[in-house]
Image (cartoon, rainbow, N blue to C red; front, side, top):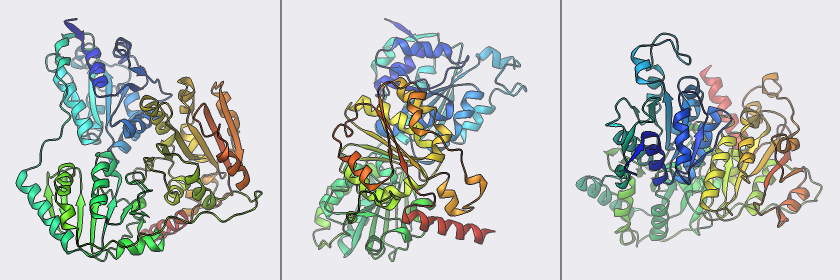
Length: 564
């Protein structure tokens, strides 16, 4: 095979970087491209229910595999996906968005084609995406097309941000040399400037030598930019107490003896708040300091000795070192940090949350009890996905087993994101380890935005656990404003009938209303094996919520009132 089509080249390249499931929807400007998927063994087309869900699914897949690809059609398809792409941009998730666009000749003649605005402007949608993409490419020349595809894949992977790639319908069939596939895409990071990196490391080592009460704080980008291993080695070498933010859940093993809990500013437990805020040195790895990630910006550090490690810069106190990447900086620091930290005398870290007190099996289920209990149900290696709302806040008090991945869209916070994300994560989990469990916690209101994606999970025989928290409406919104407002209400659904409605044959449904029913479910050995898709409806009081969500809602309401 001396030549291959450009379309096949794209999918062969994606397979080389371990992207094996392609998300999206067919449309007449991408149909010929989609034909090429079936020419590449080991690549599958998920076939999502709508483009927004496809973007959410690609995001969930990328958080597990490191990168994802979604294909939409020009105009109507690509615009439907952009909310999901914006979330991936905000939260540092690598999604390659491939758009099938009209032929080059159609664009040149400014034909009044369908899916256009009727004004002859074929660049408008590309320009829209440019604002939420790390880079973009519109292929116009077959000679440069392979290099452009390689550039887009590399940028997606290395920067962990979305990239837009427009492929005209008439170029997909054109032939290029197959030997181009023999040279792998370079996915390595460029080395840091040696002098700048040395200055960073030397300065941090001096701060560590002088510190009496230091802490390590890991956030979302520790996972996104692949420094979890370096962060663990830093904890092991220094024995400093280590904490995570809500977005950083899963970036540190929570069974580690130096793990101290989740820090959310004023919403933290008193012991965690005191431990972090009284520190005289904070080593912050991969911070994304949004309002819900910080308890409405309520961090109250007593020290100015803060080192922020980011994917493309380091900040030490008030000095910024642009271009110094944390991956290499942490590796260089690890070579010398043990000696610098040898004078540190380890202090006790805050204890893990206390187990629930014994109660009668008929006790009605409530959020505070449930989230404390979830940790006992989880297994090492689980992927836990929590929807914006009560779930995203409740999971902060759940103690994870080691090697647990947490997915929660705390910064972008698009309601309904997690149904699609669970679908994408389930595809990724199946590719990595068929025993790996994917567990979704989503509210009854959020589910109504994206429920169709359960159909895709069933179609492909995926086996997630779908926990639907039925508290009769948008509880998080009710807590912030309008507890009895009609706009915070929803139509009740028969949740236990959803799986068969979407065509499931081998499935399980449960309704859990009491602590005894939860414990019986969690103790069932068969239930704990991901042998089939399961939907569990959790019945909860309308205004019941985790305590830290109640506190966050009060903060948010107070801030909103001041701004009025």
